Figure 1 (tube, rainbow, N blue to C red):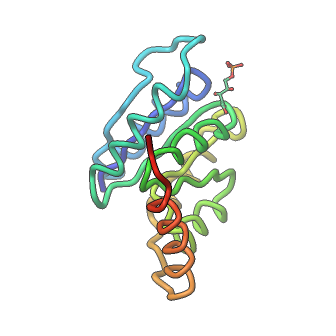
Figure 2 (cartoon, rainbow, N blue to C red):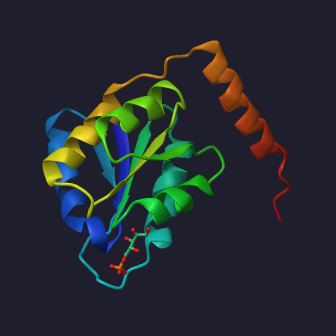
Figure 3 (cartoon, protein in one colour):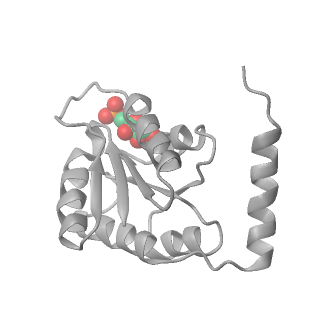
Length: 152
Ligand SMILES: O=C(CO)[C@H](O)[C@H](O)COP(=O)(O)O
């Protein structure tokens, strides 16, 4: 699977770790940066292009990282077509796919170990959407709202 990944400085080490592990797992990882550690970089500039790449690349998934993952989830969700879920354990990551058909997962690099972060992302990438009617209906309602919002 193609995986678009991005981080700010706060999860730089986790991003490097995930690129390595996910590539070894056979995923095609597209690294949207940060390419170097810059303590004053700004996550929207890094996360939004990665989220846009997920929308433009049907069937791909995204991983956005920061200190908490909160701002990264918020930024990704501003991109039309993105359903980004913050996950801090494997169960949340699994539910994000099964119930929400999330196409981006957000993690905080300061919230768990590298290995735990990998387990969360691996669960996200490895879990399919359940496709159940009630979940489709609810996701459809979100998409309909998104489509109804007039953009400048
Ligand atoms: O998680 C984040 C946003 O939700 C950022 O990574 C975090 O706010 C960066 O913090 P700092 O600039 O103090 O290193």
